[in-house]
Image 1 (tube, rainbow, N blue to C red):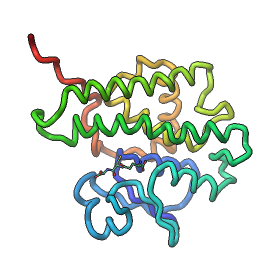
Image 2 (cartoon, rainbow, N blue to C red):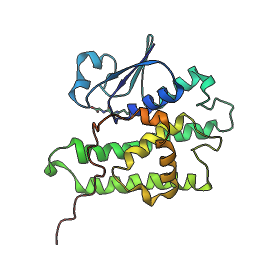
Image 3 (cartoon, rainbow, N blue to C red):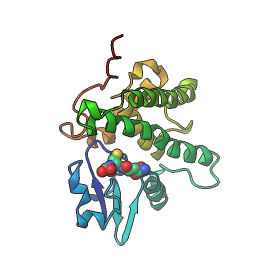
Image 4 (tube, rainbow, N blue to C red):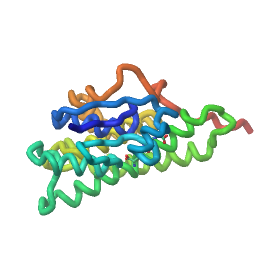
Length: 220
Ligand SMILES: N[C@@H](CCC(=O)N[C@@H](CS)C(=O)NCC(=O)O)C(=O)O
């Protein structure tokens, strides 16, 4: 039996969404996003106390990209991977890992805007720099999607769209997606999928505002 360790709105949403897309049975253990991830019990499952972590009988696996590869290989009949030898395999791998390139900027911005509580402890310079770097990663996706494809691969939806979809989902809190019309249409398609909707929490857990703007520039 599969168990997913999850915090609402964290990267483990990728795995939750994928499990729903695959229509697999699983147990879900939900933790608040905070110190509860650092208990000795959870640290014995994930050595950094992060999410996601997937347990499948005796196997313990962390890292969303590895978990996605594991699941699509274990259940090839679901058609959400592109196996070695498939002409789309190299790009399937590229976009799977690029999802983390996008997500790290979202994670830094989450830390700056939300996890760091006091304004005086935040860095306006880092916020500005990370937003710009996030936008550059989104530009690449927007260009890639500009040829009219519906999902990242021409052949259609696959597990990489759940990993990337989460990264785009989080990016919207820090930069307006409207600046990227093809990416915005891609996000609209993804966020209408029933499995995506099932992976959302009933109420916000991390992102309590619709948008986290840059702090105002100092006067003078
Ligand atoms: N590269 C890892 C990143 C995992 C990660 O950093 N998860 C964050 C949530 S988005 C976490 O658990 N943070 C809790 C903490 O650092 O205390 C993956 O894709 O699984």
